[in-house]
Image (cartoon, rainbow, N blue to C red; front, side, top):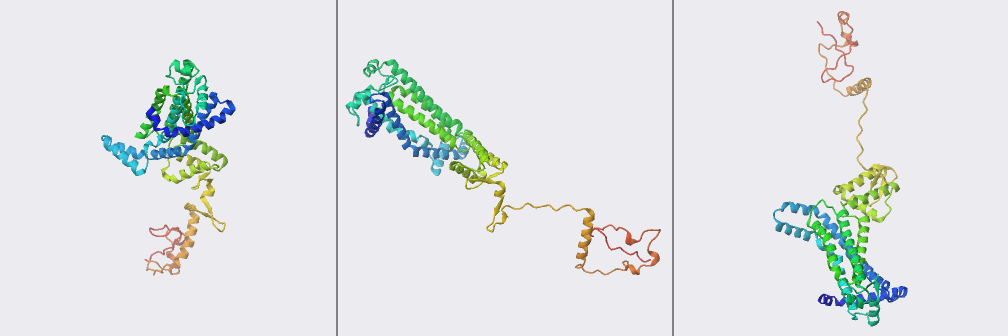
Length: 428
């Protein structure tokens, strides 16, 4: 560990300086030699580091979302080259390069805070060895050695001997009980954070190397903390437990307010958003408007939960707009022109004509036929079709039949329905 500590020795001075500054504040409140003063100084160091790492955390979220969008393509590559693992890995790396994604981006916050972790370990190890380091002089060194957290010295380890622990003013039982409890809490918080990510904020229907990596981290990290935690001083355990709790809270906030598309967390979020929007008929928060705007922009590429959200708004008489707001469906269907007159934006529905009665059709046909007859060409009469005034008087009827003018003639094929011009009887 001395070799590793020497590699990070350039940062031990800034880390020791930050701890001393926080210790001067908390020492005035709780006393300079108390465990509260030194323990809260370490907690404040963690909070300061994690605030500085927020941009990396945002980058981590974007990288994770990018990996989520690549899952369908990754699944196709797996199915295409399922019998050739080498070609499958080559195609995966090619896909990462083309899209500019990195599956290791999820480890960026851990890698970024590793120098601070080893610097703090080196500082506490020097305190346990009664060596000054950075800005910690002999007076501060003596004060740090007197500090106890629940009976365990700040620089004590689980593997320390009884003589070394007694030299720090404590007992081996107190040290091992405190360190064991902190190691269990540290491992449990890490496991809960990773499991929450796997079960709520990742679409597990697609099996990809990224999914396997996340699943592996869910079990590997807690085991690593449990194995290596027995060699960490109490102060380092305080540091790592604090950063795990911070990560867990940060992860819960992201899952609740900005979930991954297609995950169970998104389904819960859209249900809450639908209830909020339908009650108030508007999207009030800027973050919610960004989510609605992204859903509208997807169009037909929406997932199941997003389509359910849009359909729910439609049933409630609302329509999501491209700018992330919602309006009533009537206002979405009709736009107001510049002169104030409403103009239908969509295609109007085609209306079917009303069905007319038989008498209406006959009267309309007669009127229409007369009007149309004015433009039809006149046809010459044949010998069998003489005018009415040329009919013989005795040839009107036979056997008491009604005159032809009073009969209802049937429309022949090709003729219009309704009353037709009667035909005179043929001459004998």
